[in-house]
Image (tube, rainbow, N blue to C red; front, side, top):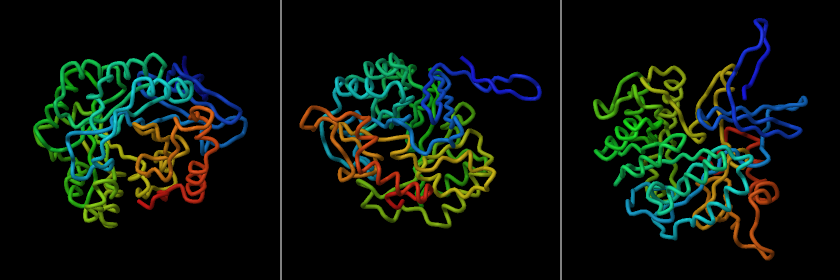
Length: 342
């Protein structure tokens, strides 16, 4: 199917889509191959502030990790990985509205014992799986399975395993991103990239990289022990200036946490998406805690399995529970202010 737009020159095709959702207020178009997504208000309504269900779900399938990274926002707690049945329970409820699932949690999702079944189940329900990995102990089988993903991101540890994973994903023809945590210490490297340089030298082929995605450092989990890594206001301002006028070799992306700090002119606001928590996205932990954002603790969560009459539904938690409604109220007042203050 195609999205058509009438103009003086006739009918133009904006994009193709193979997944569609509509209610009285908005329409959502999605292409499960390219990742194209369009959400627009209808019947005289503005573009929606909040959706009927999350279009993006961050699902923590990993309960523990052997890497023990110093600033892991998930902390070093150990719990069981999410079961395949619980993952299917999630997908079965949301697949008609949810377009993408970001596989995550405490560890590399490609090391989940049911990684293949999880990815395949997403695709069978027209949901695109994506994930981020450190690249440590990456196997050929995991790379083959990853061909079913929309994209794979490799975290920038600037180690041999980082560069090796990127090269192997690229060689396999997989859309590959690099995730770069923006801290006060990494800011200079980020600025160099945005100015058109390659701070990774020959280790990373930026021409073949899909994008460098910048993630704002937040002192959560193990990161709470490293407050000194918070970028300064001057560094955030410099990043904002460079990002809007960048000369980077590959595409530039950022999480909505960092996008909150980008100062854009009015005519460019359309291109910046601020915090989507409880509006278009949510997080579900390995133990089935549903939370507006993965950086929030369990005070904000509802367990999908604990209910007097059975399991809570994702729809009920999303629509009715106070924690989600309170986050929406805060974002309605100021969409560029993180509900947690980051």
